[in-house]
Amino acid sequence: MHVVIIGAGQAGAALAAKLRSLGHTGPVTMIGDEPAPPYQRPPLSKAYLKGQMEAERLWLRAPEFWADQSVDLRLGTPVTAMDTGARTVTLGDQVIGYDALALTTGSSPRRLPSAMGGDLGGVYTLRTLADVDAMRAEFVPGRRVVIVGGGYIGLEAAAVAAGLGLDVTVLEMAPRILQRVAAPETSGYFRALHAAHGVKILESTGIDHVLGDGRVTGVCLTNGHQIAADFVLVGVGVTPNTALAEAAGITLDNGIATDAQGRTSAPGVWAAGDCASFPWKGGRIRLESVGNAIDQAEVVAANILGAGQDYQAAPWFWSDQYDCKLQIAGLNTGYDRIVTRQGEADAVSFWYYRGETLLALDAMNDARAYMVGKRLIEAGKSPAPDLIANPAQDLKALLR
Image 1: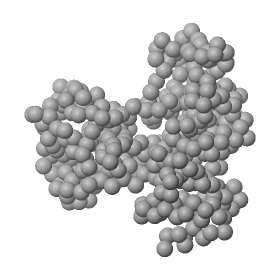
Image 2: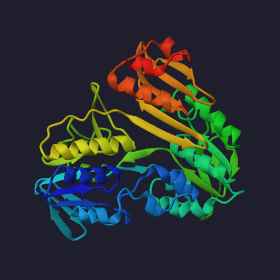
Image 3: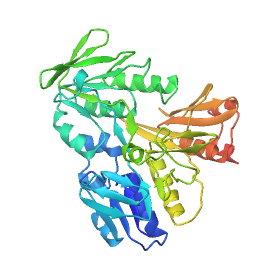
Image 4: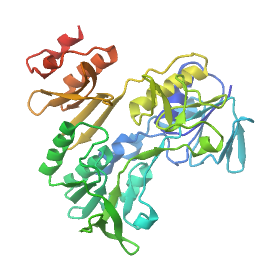
């Protein structure tokens, strides 16, 4: 059985490696549109952007791993078409047949439209190795950067820029940073953290257009005010890469729609990672995280080989900003109460409840709270909120 994987990111790499570890001996072809071998993305906005990590340390596997595992790795070669009836994919003038096809096409950053000056020199997004390589020379002490978007990517980049001595302004159109993904308590924590490092955060503030002729000189806000800038970084989220699937007639629903085992609507075609939405707790979700990319891809690999296993998502995320490590477990959708637990020193965690049910937690510099909370959520246990709020309560005792 020839398995073709479109997308050579975290999910594609995990899927290919899992096929081999499960004993699949048939041909495996993994196709990526970037020239670099499969690499990890989280350090791009942190250590790599700071210049503290060489590109080779980003590789998910040593380059020889793929050859040793007989994985035919096609890099810098975008797939231009899929024919799910004939079971073929097209790369330029080459047509490759498959028995099973896995779509791990990931996601792409939203960009400012050309009409807003998004094509000017000095306007960047941060998603790929090439993106960071293109902008690293901009990070010079004293230069002015405007970051559009107060989500995790934007705030991580702001932390790097401030740490390198740049003048940093973050624009967030919503009433608060992190509004889409976190409680007001977490937003407040990071707002104060960035303010302490000299970052200016402007909430309820949108960008009308980028100023400049050929090269950015600043931004004009929706309220008419102007801010001078040497460069602009746009971090306003991502969209799943679904164009190939859509052109092939595969069902979409906030990404490439799959069943609980990773099958799409086309026979023999599977999907995993950022691009895939799947059933979860009576609804449908799409997760953008390393953990989901790996776990879902490994389940799909097993199912391609006939395991018949449903994917049971256990969401977890993290973010590093300055000397703060944020760890998140669970999904907070539908919460109606936040319980604060003060840890030792500067550690604190915010626990999301719906009624008496624990949904998720955000732990800042509190690995113990994170690990216990993650295990509680995965086990379906919900300690009484007053126990969580009590700093004298031994968290591990709540697992018994």
